[in-house]
Image (cartoon, rainbow, N blue to C red):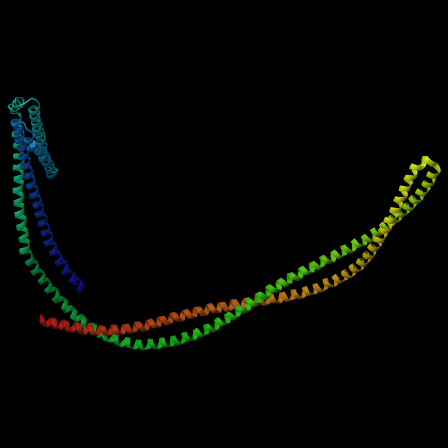
Length: 489
């Protein structure tokens, strides 16, 4: 099976990594074991130290108790008080150091119980010495209860210390083994690994050099052919780019012309739309004017009818006034006759004569008022006649205005229709110009893309030409390097 250059180099690196990994794992295991042994050794030392300190604290407690029992002064209890604190502190340290070791945990619990019992015995004797005197405390001491507890404490501490020392010796042996293993791994493993890697590298380099020499020969030949081809291609691409640039400039000029035409078409469209709006407004105004003239004509006809009815009512009023005037004359005549009759009646007719005189006075007033109303009615009839004449003339003028307004409205309607058709045509022209402008934009974008592509092709061709040159030079340098290496080998 034939491997590639990369596969061979990768295989060499893989073998090297495997060798390094093997030695690394061995070194790591040795180092980890060494660290664990060191930690265990330190832990055993601390256990032994705390056990020794605990025994010393209990001895100090007994010393303080004896001094107090003999002398009876509190200053002799100082060792006892200090031991009471330090003993339990040492127990807490031992509990943390032992951890989950069940056997040592049972022994530690036993030691804790014994220390509690010892301190209870010490407290009892101290209390008896303080309360009842030396004899009472001495009797408790002579029972040897405290001595037995202290002997048990020493036995438990001695057993735990011996086990801790055995573990310490085992940790020392493990430290020696792990350190020797690490030294052997470094002393023998590194030279072996270096020799194996050097041999493997020599074999791989020899094979790769042979294959590279054959490949470089083919690479130099291919690079020469590629260089010739890219040189010709670069010349063609430059000519194409020049032609595309000229075409792009022409298309840009056409685009500007189309843009100017589009702007003119939009201006015409805006003007036509404004004219259409104005004509529509004028048409609406004319329609409103015609309707207004018709309303004026109707109002003039109504006014004429009202004036005619007013003339008729004035005539009726004149007849009524004539009737009232006749009644006033008759009342005056009747009042004269009544006055005559009242004179004839003498004293009895005086009251009737006064009434007759009042009737005569009222008849005169009615006659005067009737004369004034007749004068006013005459003025009204003259004004009514003048109003009828003016109304007839106004009606004729309104008829003429209605006809003229109708003709104007027809003309404006025709003008509005023509302007609307012109606006529609301008809209179509603007739409066509806009489509042409969009088409020209697309053409410009396409030509710009072609120009960019041509520029990129030129740059790419030049890069390819430079790459071909570099490739050719690289092949020559590789050939020189391989030749020099081979000579050195």
